[in-house]
Image (spheres, rainbow, N blue to C red):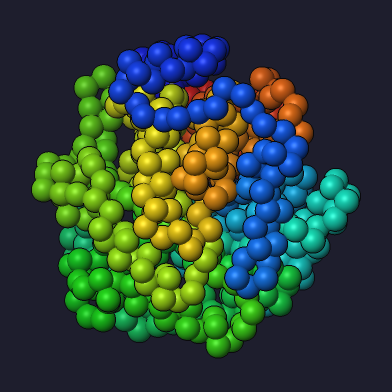
Length: 481
């Protein structure tokens, strides 16, 4: 799909210049989303609120940098100068919680792309150096790093593995999905991961966690979101054996990983990034607008109802009860998947090249995630809950996020693609500095379109570093084709 000549069908956020403009638009759209017109600064700001975890780790404020998939490591999983530049930006952003910085594979076959980072014995020195660089840069910028909490996101990409080629998928799946198998060209009888392979993978997660602790990271995230393998376990209603059908079996994967980490890496904190809800896969409909790719009833949306286009958090709550039993405090929330329903996962006005035009004003998607996390916080106040999906708010991000924190709808505000273009946003908000309009992410989706087409990920429209690269011209050609 071409995005080069795409004309948005909804007002741009930059056009909503006053609180009245925003309020009127939200009312017209029927969107329930609070915001504060006046921002607090200094110690009175809810963004400045610190938190000490039950494990004794301090998070100095309520900003979090979300983990994003990297496409610029070496083929043996080491960071490059591009990786280090991005991580340095995270370190000097002003955020005090770095949720893994980016997805790190625990097995070579589980990589989402052939340049994804891997943590193994050969790369330990590189991960140690990355951690030390984060601490050094943060301390140089802010005086100390005692209240900076940095983790590592451990992942296996499951259905979306591309370990050897940027274009060839080599999926590892838990069950035959009637829509996704067809969407990605898999036969109904495509082989499933065996229980033995899952057992080996669990061991790999535990070994990776031990390595993460050895190289300085204070927690690991066991990724359960976005359609990757951890998330697919939660919807394995059709799978036979001890990892499928019942909620007890579908949560066995996380329980066994946590048990292993507790035994082998005592003192290492564990977090979970989770798609709180999911919907049916979407596809391009008339004139390129997204429509459901299947009719209801649709039963594979974990945290969704059988309509495929609405939430039912009952099973999500069952999963969260399991996390509570496992004494997990750090919870990073998200929704859906960038591969099959991106408009609910990362609301954007401009779709990536393989996507579809948004079927709703993206502000609906922002409000939906805020509402879901609010429900989680009400039911499970013991979690330190990080919210996601805020980048589309653009100029209004601090105002909505402040209201979220003030009203207890989340404990921390997670920033993803926004910090690719505007890494110092947390510092600016905390200091009361006016937002730099030229750096604000406008959700052009180039950071998705680029890797979908085998190009490194970065903010090509707004970051001068990427903007002047020759491959930017290649990207523009792809978008216009």
